[in-house]
Image (cartoon, rainbow, N blue to C red):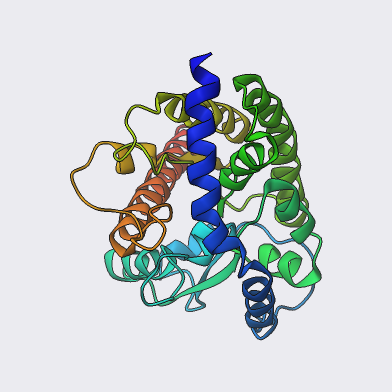
Length: 293
């Protein structure tokens, strides 16, 4: 079966490329957690889950920093970022501060290289993460790529499409739990889930099964996410597929490079803009109704 042959080739490429990354995973996780422990949570009057602070997107509401909590895998940690400043985070921060003229934007990075969805769910149990989510103005999540990678690693000698479908069902269940857990901590904060992309879409065009897998997982992820209130799915697959630019990190040709992260940040920012504009329209309509009564 062609699926077996081509997926096997991709599996070998993926595993060989990612071995360069995963060999340093334990060190990266430890340093990442140490950095997170050094971050001071803003002081509040109590620990109750507050109403969403999205209103602070307008600087007239408050001079407190707008807090963006990012979590997930290596895309959030920023593997491939030449300056090691956190991948898309500094680009997103700059856009929010300059284009929206915010007083200040604070970015918290809980990304861990190699994280799968089940590991992110476990990470949400940590008290420090919980507190930061409580006070967050927005949540950005990148997760799912390593769930697909895990299928390649476990079955690379006998890959079948059904194995990816089975793993996807497990991913869907965990994704729901992740959103539910975030909602336990903060009932109304907007959540932005960043979709998956195929790093081989340009260099290995003949391996079309990978495109099928990525597209299938993105459709499922979007369906799950958009079933929840104030949760939005950010597609980035097209950024890496329909471009003449080099957007991949040259040491592994898997993770984004600086330009790739810049484009991801712009796409996240666009998603945030759509949310805010829609919210403002709804609020204006509600005020109009009140005047007519």
